[in-house]
Image 1 (cartoon, rainbow, N blue to C red):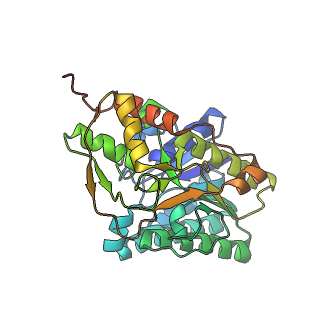
Image 2: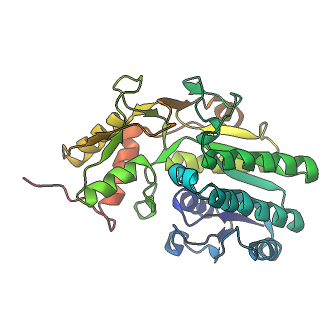
Image 3: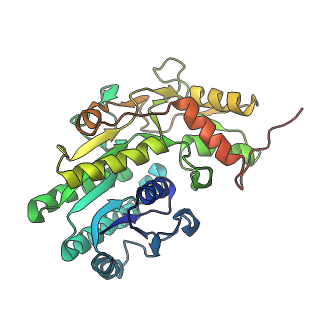
Length: 330
């Protein structure tokens, strides 16, 4: 038996692949390498294909049958919120179309267990600070809509042919579990700051007029290793028949502001670098923190790392990577 991981050469996916390998699982990685790298997956077999293409369905079906796949962990998707607003059809084609091909292949191959990489973006602008899973969902961008549709697709397949699935709704993944697995795409706050510093540019903070303690957005930053471990817990729960719900938040329950993240990087780097404050990004909630009590109760999940650990791990990986930040000495 083996586990098929789509997007396994990317940021979160590569961490999950390594943890699966460390506990002796056979892993098949499906990735188009648009943002990831084959060097990140160890000795896992790589099937290089874009899930949204016409040939993907056949390739996925044959791979699942040939490799005796019994479970799928699905990461592969486009994830830039701003880009999704500008190119919605591309996001629906990639995220929804790719998932449709994957689910069709799973049906034909008889694979009935799936972990889905969802997102807090399904909630949109919730009117609560601590967000539980059962709050009304009103995604306010096409990216969040594709994730919510993905959850519906898995639910419908569960009714139709017995798919057992868990959607993990991530909040803000950050940090690095191994220094060679840093975030390869600067789409999240911490790598965006580090990349701008590397390029000699001033980091930009979008909005300092929110109704928060320091005026900047507050988010629930979760260490990528905690997030990766949540996937293994969810996989075990599916296999053991202990997954009581179809969706789980994965966060720490603690919020940190953008200014707190900036100050943390300043402290670790020893560099009091300047920042630029710009206007808010349209549609960005001021405060978004996970209520993760459900996954703790059902699966025993509890975050082991805090913001300081996240920032230190990201800095350590940056300092041996190709985009090393050079701290001024004078």
